[in-house]
Length: 140
Image (cartoon, rainbow, N blue to C red; front, side, top):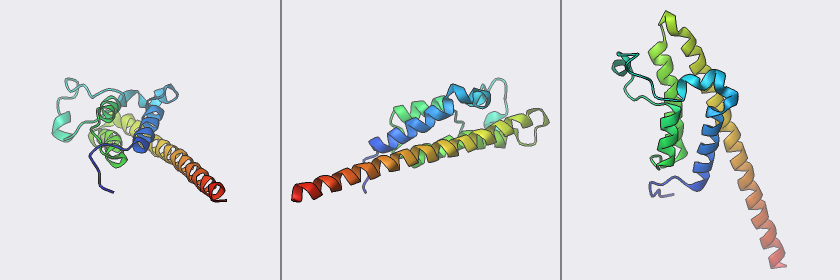
């Protein structure tokens, strides 16, 4: 399939569902560090270690502005949030807890992704069955 650079409605729906799950209040005990961009004034060496900062707000803004052409690009940036947190905080005794939160959020991302993709697959199968049934009955 040739892409026009614009994300399909199905991919957009899946990505929005994943993002909603990641920023939900139910995850507030583990997502709070990832909701907004890192404040560089508190971490002056951040950009020497992290080449491409990412957070959940920026991820959502990128999604809604049409920056991603498919869900794979969105998935890469979502994973980047947690990979960056692990990379920056690994080996820092005062922030090892951040690594734990990042790993929990990475698992949450995987679960939200699986849940959203399963819902999308179920909807697509239902639609296919409906089309088959319509064609079967209209041919009779």
